[in-house]
Image (tube, rainbow, N blue to C red; front, side, top):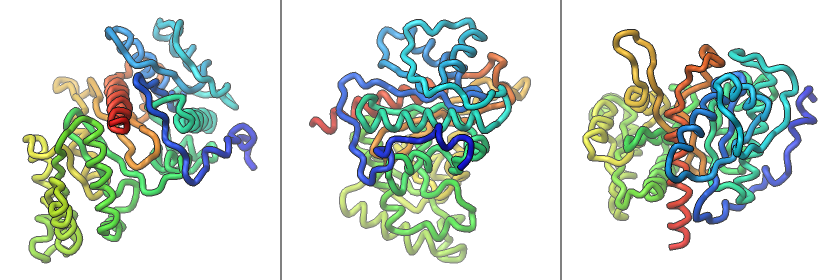
Length: 356
């Protein structure tokens, strides 16, 4: 037992095999986790909430994390916490050093995620939006997970979650994410691909796309070139998409990876299913990361990470903790604002679909 074991004890409800879905809400409250307090999480949370406060109407938000870290960030930015709903997960078990990955920051990040899941399963919030965490810090605190997606699946009792990245109407779901490239072909099965397509289709309906059009990227160059470069696209993807079209689904594939994203950008698809992490991440980040051509510096970050296949709604920023700029007051909150907007839309429309 390590030093954090006693502090991270969680309600048994988090590990139920069949957790209940969040209750229907007409004006859903969003649970916003602070992320790793040593990173830019506290800063972008406060900046995002300040931006939302300037709107005529905004969904209610509860920040879940360490109050002391939020207070420190607010003081540094010259912002107040008056009227802000905060679910405090307690002080850090040890000092948190801004800009440095550490066990204390990882533990706070873990507690916030666990508390948010509990609140979502109990219906106290309609969706979770997560600020960035550091996998290294999480592991230092005794929570060894490849990322948010796998941790959320563990806490909710879900199996086979799917990552979808989005930048506006440019949406990419992933057959696989955090695995070695050599293992990807073995994961391309009719069952897994069918699940990813079904979850993507359902997510698009929740986002308001009435008749979703989905393109499936090929695993191999030129979709296998008739078997010269591999048969996975021919033996798995092609017959599966044919069966789905026969059921009435608007899905095409396999489509070579060097053209499928161009077709989506041209408006031919509402989403693309990518075969592996970098195939799907690169095009979304090329669109969402704004670079100053004069200096080469990153001016803005945009994009949303949506986890499909959970009994709760979860969206997140599409970037990391940025320890190198933490505490300097220069972090951009655009991605977090976009993630909150996505969560509000999915929670509200999801409630309407269930009711209708």
